[in-house]
Length: 94
Image 1 (tube, rainbow, N blue to C red):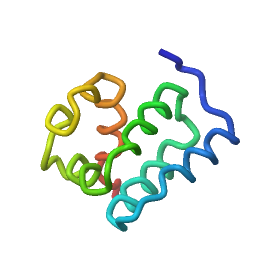
Image 2 (cartoon, rainbow, N blue to C red):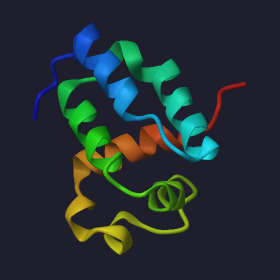
Image 3 (cartoon, rainbow, N blue to C red):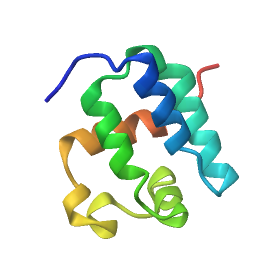
Image 4 (tube, rainbow, N blue to C red):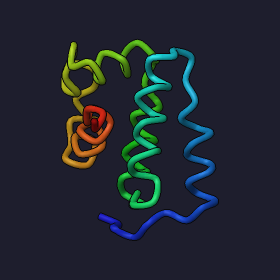
């Protein structure tokens, strides 16, 4: 597991890769970057990248907890992916 922070160039590339077709996904992802961009580790960025390989509908189902990781892809049901998914789901602070 790599706990080193990602650099600005890698962060920029990751933001670009995370652009989605569904507005709802973009909103979750933008909130994620607003909160975690300055503390994002290499391992977290890799896990997020794997989530971005999913279809928009599968990703939204994960965000909304309509499906589990194991239901969508058993290979994604790992600690690193669960950690990033929890970060994505974190409700807005008031």
